[in-house]
Image 1 (cartoon, rainbow, N blue to C red):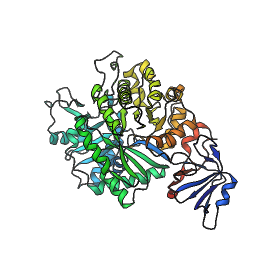
Image 2: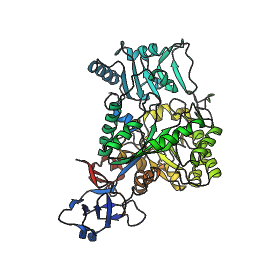
Image 3: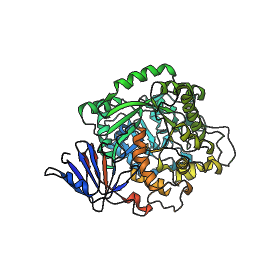
Image 4: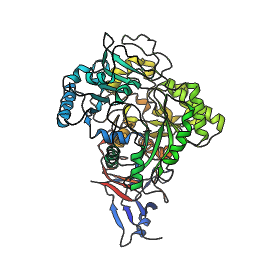
Length: 544
């Protein structure tokens, strides 16, 4: 065998493989792993070999994010950024500062604010008017299912007390019916369509900005959960294709083509054409994203029984199924027959069941075609549906950071679900014990894209540095090897990258080096680890 280009030695090396998961050395030739083992690997060291001493460090497969909005996240880094605080005064200071620093911007856009910062999760237009009265403002909240707008934005959009709510959203209102400042779900588009379109250069810059950040967190591949235009977010498809063609895309990316919920099966031919068009190098679009419901905090997640009100009494609202469940079965069956993967947004227990029913219909009609359909978010899952994941081969795509006590959970979710349903939230442990395959993602920019933070919460069911010592439904914790597998081999499975996700000879050399061995450290210190190096195909793409 030829000498190696790159050798890691003096381990530990965690292969996340089915056997010999703990070794000390690994060799890379070209873009692939040539050998995994112990001192015998050193026989491949030659005069031109780069040797990396892992003493005190840990080598892992590169992390993969199975649900992220990378281009949107990268663009928001350059816009009015409200992340990292929950203080209303701080929000207003940042908005004023951004507007003053960008007098040429016709619209002030950005986001990242938290619903917990406002009474009932609803900010007002008057607050925005106090800092930017003369230009329209539209700021997404951190989950991107709602947006905060000022009076000028509503005026330009022609939204008044007489404007009806769209079928897939809601305009929050003052006592006289006038818009109060908050737009939910599909209502965002009423204002977002007026925002000047991002240029191709803006989108490409956002992608490259995001890629740099994601590599710094050890991420070597991801699935972009929305290729298309929705809720004011422009279509990132061309940015990915441009970067793939010019070589600036160093990550491996699977794209999920947006299913327009206002249309039906007539769009399938268009999706087939897009799949062929959007394929070059490390980028391909083999998945279709169907958003089946909304979120619990604004009462649009689809539940099997009504939400409660502030007094604990049942309301008449059970949330929204954006796609008719019967039609959904037909759409998924047709997509499956064409070998599309279906990537569901399914947050409430009714939406989860509707998505599983659609997968079951596809399996019944087409047989098992191995298309790796997956359900993302899974906030509320009825216990009866847990066992269906393994039986149907449906993958549980989890966002672990959300499975922790925080004000948005404790104040805006649990009281309106009630104790029984609140105990069904984020059942990672039950899913794992029932044989489901777990993949993991961040939904960034909704929440942090850092895999180590997500792994920390999956294992501890507490946020890193949380002031609250309570674990959130501690019986749903998963062990560290299982959490690592979800962020590596599990997400690689979802992303169709079968020669990544674990460290074995012949696999691509997508690797991450941590500054410590988290497998031997206390579980409550997982998030303290830092990424020192990230490699894609044996090429160093991040180093500190």
